[in-house]
Image: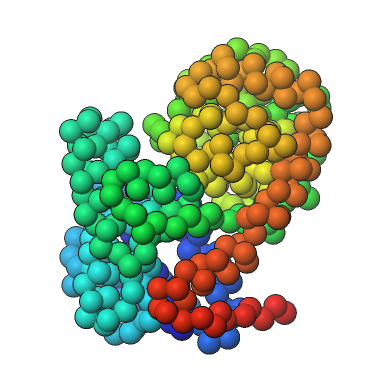
Length: 371
């Protein structure tokens, strides 16, 4: 079986979609008889190790992202590869190119709905844009042979738009990169903190939907000995005294070390379609305090952390204090056990293969070879 994935969400500072594709690409190599090709935008035509770059213009202020504007090159690359199935990871030009190629090759096309586009459009550009984006999403995703959503809340939103052929397919976390053993006992000293400082962390892009002002206000309300570490690009510069900012893109191993060396993750985002950073924290052996919104209630059970009122810094601060009255380390251990049981990438890829076989009308699932 030859699977082709394609997305425009693939840049040096990309988040969950690139993580998903790279984890999937690594694991599908373990399956005899399975070939995996990944089509992404680039500066020129090139191919390496099954990843095909197709020229696309750079987005201004897009942190390295490129935006395909022509269907033809993508469609022709798919026709040359002749896959047995196509999966699309974004709702833009590449999606329509995949549908075109799927019809010409007579193969199924799956759409993975990674982002809540109507909500993002409403928040950034107003209700009129949100309503029009909802119509667009409905039209596009009803065209796929099957739609995958990373959480039940996303599946429900698609269903409300008239997209009914939706299946929940949770994503995974890299258990080898994010693990408690990466803890650095010297981190607090390097940050100028006392050994008994209660170190909170958030890692990711400083985009509007992450609601970083809520985190900063929660840190101000908590005061010392609590200390918040913000890790990632486009982070705020004006912060309370008990906040440290690492305002740059950090590699996965570096982020994993910061995670494992902290006491818990703070997450104020209220639009998460899945919340991969929460899983990465849990895999690192630390609990999560997050907003009770989006997909976060689905992936942060009570034995792995706590949920607070969305967009409420006072509620978040109080929830953090309450969590520290109990056994924070035990919650972190339980969080690691939870992701090992429910979010290992091997289980995710096995679930994906079951979807692929279903849309192809075949029954025999390939079996991975573990060395």
